[in-house]
Figure 1 (cartoon, helix red, strand yellow):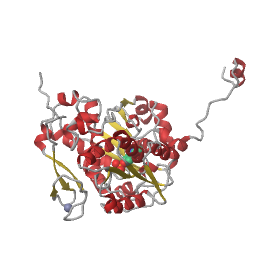
Figure 2 (cartoon, helix red, strand yellow):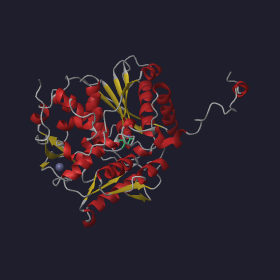
Figure 3 (cartoon, protein in one colour):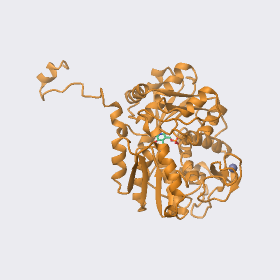
Figure 4 (cartoon, helix red, strand yellow):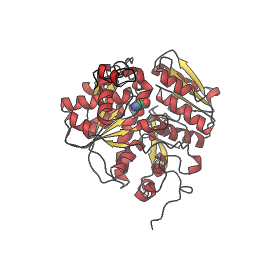
Amino acid sequence: MTALIDRHTVPSPASALVCRNCAAQFPLGAQHACFECFGPLEIGYDPAALARVTHDEIASGPHSLWRYAGLLPVGQNPATRVDSATGMTPLIRADRLADELGFTGPVWIKDDSANPTHSFKDRVVSVAITAARELGFERIACASTGNLANSVAAHAARVGMPSIVFIPSDLEPAKIIQTAIYGGTLIGVDGSYDDVNRLCSELAETDEFENTGFVNVNVRPYYAEGSKTLGFEVAEQLGWRLPGQIVAPMASGSLLTKVHKSFKELVAAGLVPSSSWRVFGAQSAGCSPIATAFANGWDVVQPVKPTGIAKSLNIGNPADGPYALDAVRSTGGAMASVSDDEIRAGIRLLARTTGVFAETAGGVTVAVLQKLVESGAIDTSVETVVYNTGDGLKTIDAVSEGALPTAVIPPTVKGMREAGLL
Ligand SMILES: *Cc1c(COP(=O)(O)O)cnc(C)c1O
Ligand SMILES: [Zn+2]
């Protein structure tokens, strides 16, 4: 019998906050910027602690992202976890999509619309609110492009914490309703996401918000680690190995960067065989600061003013842009951006070939996949995982035109015949 580690007594494998810019280290806590250079901080781990995690321990854990607690900074003790049964979403073999795009290698859709609030944000929020509770915050807040608002409000309601959520006031109606329904405070701001984010950074410094954990501001190093579970799960679902290529959407660029980090950690911990993989990034033409930097060979991401229907990805000044560029360039991947019409076509292509109805962000990713095939940037003979990060019902207006009944008939056989359907 394999001895399982008792997570009640195991300390976190996280060892420090590490500056991503100058590598200075700080004690774990609610800090997000380096005191030396103001660079962003991320969680550093004790490699020996990560290497102690086994397949058996993960397999015997809950059917949620908390099965990877041994690889996360918080939640080692089940009693502290915010557990909404997030994660373990389907990895769908998409043979018909692969055929249509001319792939000879397998194509998989990692369908994160299956999370409790129907986007990948439930992962980062599960980890961030767990961290906020462990760090002693009494209230939860965020700056959101939509899905984060849904998820923060829902999880705060689940654990009975007050929440205050800030969104651009022009979000999709479904995302506003799906946030307001949970009963927290919801503030629409007349401005872009980047304005909302700047406001939240300022509020986080005020005395009135001293008790408040902004999941993607002062708790951001913890929040970002939640995205790693998108990589851990794919590896486990493939039988503990890594795919050769991944295609992921980019807003701040954090998700893509952290999936890449998760693959490196799995190899270092001995949980998957060492292999090479290439990372591909997707943006919309209405907001493509990272893809534009990639196309021009820039190291610096020039901020833009976002437009277009892929609102969940509309971050004009992406905090993790340089790190996403690094992940893509260092693996020999590529980035591309697609127009609103291409996004709509991407949503339809995915729906009609896989039965998955994606929100606009998923349309961006599938349309970029197609573009990368057409340009020859992606290798169609290599196993490829494509991340769908949100549910089509959240952005239904984007594709409502033309999505109508084939015919409307009276309830008679004659009606069928007269409509030319018999
Ligand atoms: C937030 C979000 C992303 C990615 O966000 P990053 O800031 O790049 O981590 C992708 N898809 C959807 C649907 C999102 O809501
Ligand atoms: Zn620094």
